[in-house]
Image 1 (cartoon, helix red, strand yellow):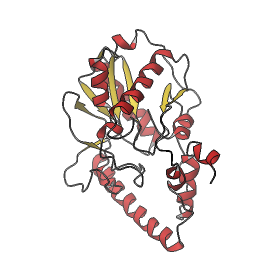
Image 2 (image 1 turned 45 degrees about the vertical axis):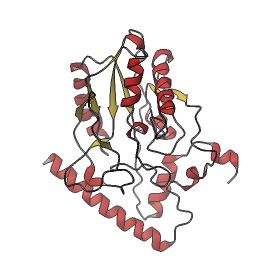
Image 3 (image 1 turned 180 degrees about the vertical axis):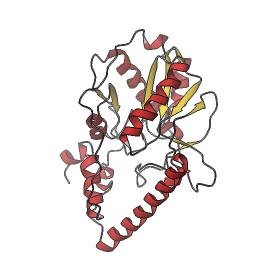
Length: 172
Length: 107
């Protein structure tokens, strides 16, 4: 493969379609698509805004097997309801329940997929006005209807309750 | 913030910071706070400066001069029929576990 090809971003949708077809599944995943995408201009600068961090990482689940760095894909670690955690703490959050690149990365630094430490630094440096007291966990549910109708509604309610101005979603 | 450019852009989001890194590193390189702060700064700048939905900002950071990881992810090129069958059996198990956990959560 030449450099031109490899410098382009990976076409994940095609790659995964091909992979699962090769495995013998004939029902390719239909990725979420939205004709219309909402947009809100900022009402105040980021430096005066409270930031809410939204993650698809999972809290440690008892009796669900290996969820740490380098763990094999672990469907038992999945979660199916929006949750919240304390941004003043440093709790373990894992990504063993999603398809990250297990050949080239090991998820042994939470900061590479959950930028709470970076956000604390940004707050200390005045780059953001503040940090919400809670972060928010969003399920990686394969039902797009559940994501839209249940999870997004639950997430929005929490963000509003915490008076979050700006949400940053880090997808894994 | 994400690493799967095509998936996020297909879905459509207001603002997107794309890091061309192996999946699992949407917030920056592991054990590299400078990389993580720089990635977050791009997100904060995108919040401030984007004027319309579907704005993508691409991080200038490079994972490694070696881009083999891009070719290897979910590659079927080097898998034998036996390996494909083995992967299918593993995935069937994963799906069964996922269904059980989901049923319990919803039950």
